[in-house]
Image (cartoon, rainbow, N blue to C red; front, side):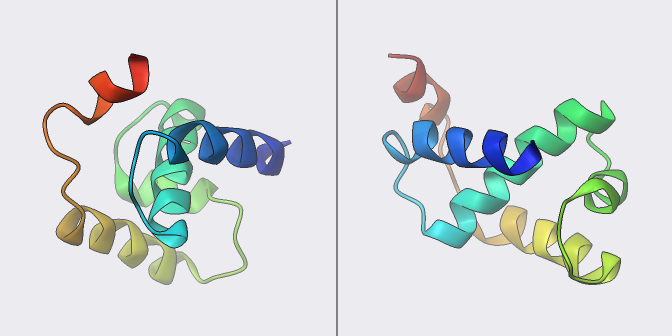
Length: 81
């Protein structure tokens, strides 16, 4: 079920964002994770992510996403329109 939601969200967001496949997947996992665990704590989100990677690796992946990706202030406005 999460894979279906992930694929659908990636498809919708890819039209409005110019991110690489892995960064888009990470963004979608963040959105789904926040909705699932109802917190923005990265350690909680990483523990719920559907991946075979170690918990520490997943946590670091989320940290790197925020460290290197700059979406800009109006990225969500382009998705809504």
